[in-house]
Structure formats: structure tokens, C-alpha cells
Image 1: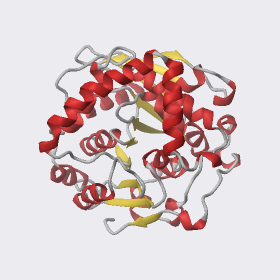
Image 2: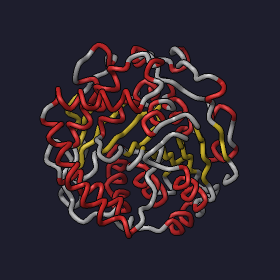
Image 3: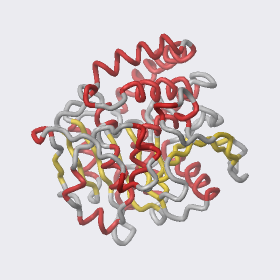
Image 4: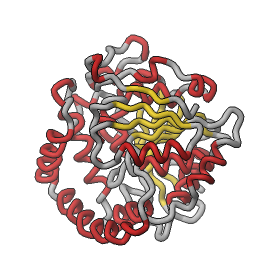
Length: 357
């Protein structure tokens, strides 16, 4: 395994740079099996390390959404491109459980002995299984609208569909202007809080670049990434729960779930939480799949930085509803002096189910 190589750095606000700022600091290493593993870093260099597992389809650039919050709360985000996505080499026949090996190699190369791990959508299972396997080094696990385990009887049809729509996304990624227009329409339909955001173009640009980056090589990586979620993950939920319980105190899992999420149903999230005794659900009844990611960036960073004891105790500030701040706050050196994000109306406030803690 080689030491990581740094290829690009950008620290100016997203609003003042058209391209490079969204990509943060790009690094890579050669894994023990000879593959290139590439990742992007955001936030202060001396911040607490938090590994982000991107969605499906997606790429490490997606983590730029959290960059302003990471800077305010003193977190260093390490977002790794999974095999075949971005600049990471393809790896055939991998399972979700295999992801822990790549994450561990990156953590070792950066000298991190302790860290937290979180993921959105298809990145949720990758965060959960890697955190469970690396339980002695993981402080907390965060799952944002996590994809649940699929019904094996539906797996074949879903795989077939992915072989149609993943190449279609490749066509869009090869035509950036068209792709961003399509994404723009999709965001307007799925982001009801758009009018409250300080810089909506920031998010359109992040996801447009992330989509393009995910298809940088071909559609093979995206297809296989989806297949891994539809197949046996490599660990059962019981095995995951057993691993989480082996630490003292047990490793906490925080799950953010939107009440208007049409991709990840509340029932599936509850089933996942019920299987994990150390989990807690923070539910936003008004949030869609996308809003659950965009609305709680500060909240997620706070939860990922807390110790196991603090997370297991639970506090009122863990359920605050955060809206995306002005990206210019990215340059604030003191997290405590940064402008605070707008808040949702009281009747939209998320609720916490801490019965599992």
C-alpha cells in the first residue's frame, strides 16, 4: 500500500470558484491488491476525521454538501470513491462488506486511529457495515435515508433496470449542460425547501459534478455498485448488531429519515433500526430523500463528532433542523463565529426515537 498522493487543493468559498472548489483535496493510494483508491477531502486539516460514503449512483464530490458544516464544527471529511467510480479502479464481485477494507487502508494511510463514518442512501449500508467491522476505531455511525436490504425476489428485476438507467446517466454525464438541466428539474421537484437555501446553484453544481465524476470511466462501476446493494451484503443484520454490541460502550448508530421520502420508506428504516439495538432514529416528517441530506448537515457533523458516551446519552440539540448556510462561511476559521443556518418552522421540527439507545 502506497502513501496517499495529494493532487489538488482549494479552500476558497464554493460561490467564488466554478469548478475546483467542489472537488476539495484529491488524494489516492495503491491498495494492497494493486488497485487505485481515490478520495476527496473537505474541512480543516486538523479536524476530527469523518468518512463519508456517497449515494448510488454518486461519487465523492457529493460530500461537498457537508463542507461548510464540516468547517464550522471542526470535522475533516474523507469521501472515498467506491470501486469503478471517479478515479478508483474497478473491483469485480465485491460485496458491501468488502468496503471496510478500502476504508481501513485509507484511514491507515492518513494515520487516523479513530474516526466516524456516515453515508447517504446507497452509502448507508456501506457506512453501517464498515463501521461495524472497524468497531474498535469507529466513534459513531450515521445513516441518512439509508437504503435497506432488498427482497431477493425483486433483485433480478432491479438489476435489469439498473443496466438501462445507469448507462442513461452516463449519456447525461457526457453532456454536462443537458445533465444539469435534468438534475435542475429533479431538484426543483424534490427539494421543497429550495427557497430557503442561501445558494441553490451550489447544490446543483455539486450533484452535477458528482454525477459526471461517477461515470468518469464507464457505467460498469455504477452498475456493480448498485448490484452490491441488491445482493447479499456479506453480513446479516444480526451479525452487524452483534459487532456493534462488542464495544464498551456499544457503538451508536444515528439514522435520519424523511417522512416524505419515496425512495426509502419509513417501514424499511424502522425494520433496520429494530434490528440494531444501539440505533436512534431522527425523523423529519416533512423531508424528502434529498432534503434529508441537505437539511441536516450541521446536525450530522455534530453527531459524528460526539463521543460514544455523549451519543448514547442523547441531547436536545441532536434534533435541530438545519438549513444550508451561505457557502461563504466556508472560510471562517473559528467554527463558533460562523453564521448560523436558517431554521425550519417549529411545526416542521424533526422528532427523535431514542428507544433503542
